[in-house]
Image (cartoon, rainbow, N blue to C red; front, side, top):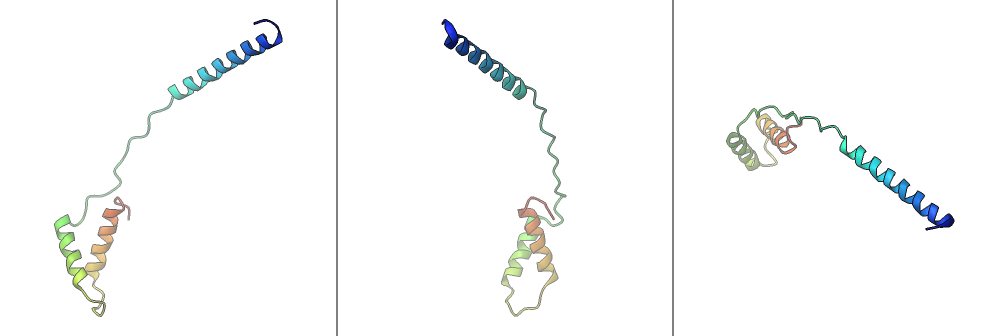
Length: 86
């Protein structure tokens, strides 16, 4: 390759190699991800008790007065479903 086009092709090739090497080095020196910590506390109610309470609450009718046990059971079920988030 002679002339201007040859020099341009060699320069472009060298620039491409330098860019590729820089990207490879940058990707090779990533820090490890932080350790995963389980933020969920142990469940306050066992799954069997929670299921039984939710079944009982489902049998309540719309005219029954609000039941604090049902409200607590639904809150626990939501926490469990959403991954332990309050």
